[in-house]
Length: 292
Image 1 (cartoon, rainbow, N blue to C red):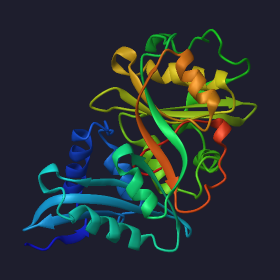
Image 2 (cartoon, one colour):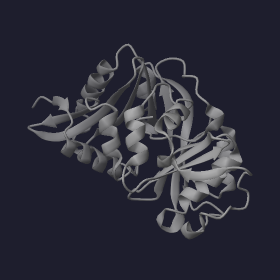
Image 3 (cartoon, helix red, strand yellow):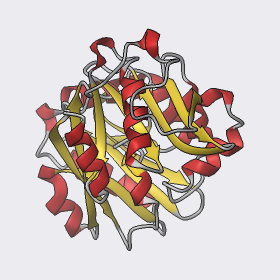
Image 4 (spheres, rainbow, N blue to C red):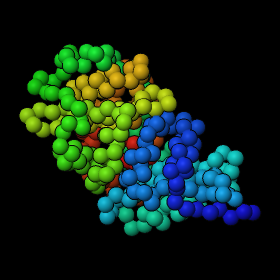
């Protein structure tokens, strides 16, 4: 049997990985790979048979103590031959000594538990057109229910250190290069809620093959999260969006129900140790199931 060759992913490989994720029904963002690449250029691995890509994984390092695994995919025609587990070992070896997180699809969760991962919460994908979504042309107006005294501004207009500091409330390590690309890539729209000079909420929406995805969605209150979600949805074709919502925040689940969005795809957030301390009460939508 031909041996699997494992190496770093090229730009073309990253597009292949995106296509495989799309085939799995994960609805990846059209430009996600550009932000992924700057997060950790060596963190994306591809497995080849006779030079042909057949499997992949991402094992991205953040700071000195955290890592995240995603993109764990083997092409359907080569499954059951051990190629996936070879990629898994290469990825976990790369993150040895760190607290590691992942979002595990249902069919893999038992395998992750056997590898030492512990369930923290579920991320549930909610989809639909949020009730009360305005037309994009109406965005300068104050919407019903918008919190008083709050300004909604282009996130790119704010000093980046403010955005980075706010993001750290919801993620275990600094991820400045990734965050800069994630919020600034062409075609994406980031909206920040600002009050008295402080960031009180942040949301980013990006084009996808299916419903445009919102992530992250951070907010100090459900009212702010609602206002951000509706403003972001106004930018999507037809207003249809998808948000990956942590069920560890009951207010987030209740908000999605109130907005009329429908739950569907579900993944388990798991860690190799105690879950990091995050502002879960303000986390209404995770940034990315692939990179955390």
